[in-house]
Image 1 (cartoon, rainbow, N blue to C red):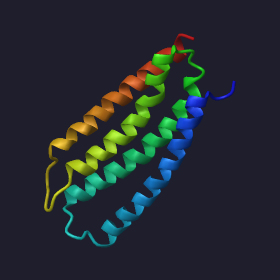
Image 2 (image 1 turned 90 degrees about the vertical axis):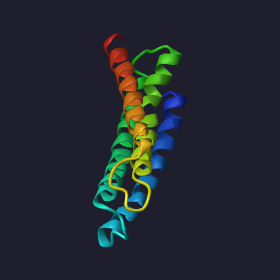
Image 3 (image 1 turned 45 degrees about the vertical axis):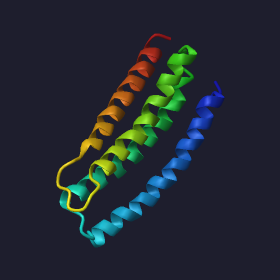
Image 4 (image 1 turned 135 degrees about the vertical axis):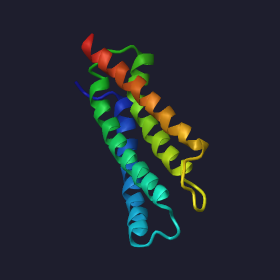
Length: 135
């Protein structure tokens, strides 16, 4: 079965988004060479944000291959299709934003974005999993 237009377009966007993750790796190399005033906490959160972005974008691409096979109604297909990509935005953004500010050693309130992304991912994956098991 061919990929739906929705999955194909989102997959294209996700592939292009991986280029930004690659570019973000340059920032991590800069931190490795010279922490430039960043605390160990901030360096750790930068690494976590970068890793989550890459892994979740790849997982989001994988999900696109299965959504069209799950036989979900349009609304549920949208949930299954977008849960992980939404997490790929929220979770890394939460790690980066929660560590902003000179000398920060603990996360600020933006850490809530990490948990919101985790919830979006859980709902999307559960929807896709149930859809695949009940086809």
